[in-house]
Length: 92
Image (cartoon, rainbow, N blue to C red; front, side):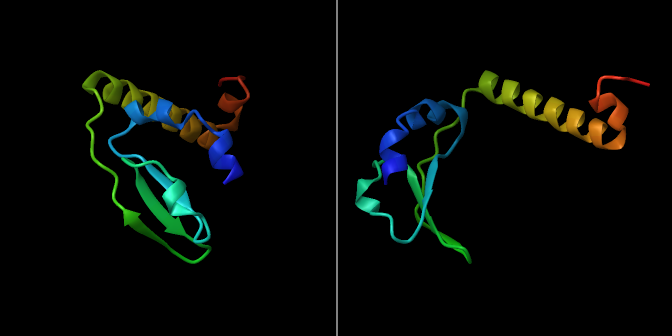
């Protein structure tokens, strides 16, 4: 609960996805979570959606930018695994 109260930036993430969920443990007081977001309750063995998140479409230009950023990051990580010299900035 203390982490949730201290972390006030979560609304800033809403424009960056189509759905937003809080994942909490079984002992978390669900009535403390804000309305209008999804809730997942999970323990070390499993999780369950107890409240689905409303779907709000991300802006097309933001979706494109995020997809490109994700692809570039994935390509760089794969390249670094395949050729460690690239990861160290030494090139070929």
